[in-house]
Length: 160
Image 1 (cartoon, rainbow, N blue to C red):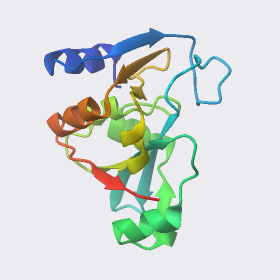
Image 2: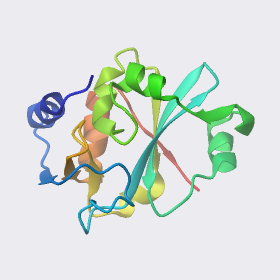
Image 3: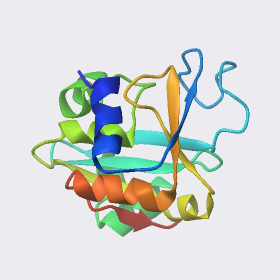
């Protein structure tokens, strides 16, 4: 399983500037324990049947437009589904409610393609769990991209 220590170590090794907020466990951005003022983001692990996996990171203000997403990925909408709990654990080492870009270090076979919503670039900070849901890491969009690239996951920007 993914650990907090490895997430923090990764940020420190890469000299990423970040802020940390500790809080009670939160499972979604709508959770009553969510600290006020966190950037409104959500993380999804999607798959195309048994072939491709996609980590989608987007603003929480919008619903996923699966048709537009499938068109940008050049796949049929009917083939795009949510990953199962077992797939989350085996690919990223986390459970739902703890999905985070920092867990992509567990995708050592580079099976997961990273998709970033273009609107994320407009946020002053991006939030991510450090592989636990009792803390949130805040960093710039540019630093998020740097971390992803150092993990071998060059992200594709998607548009709605």
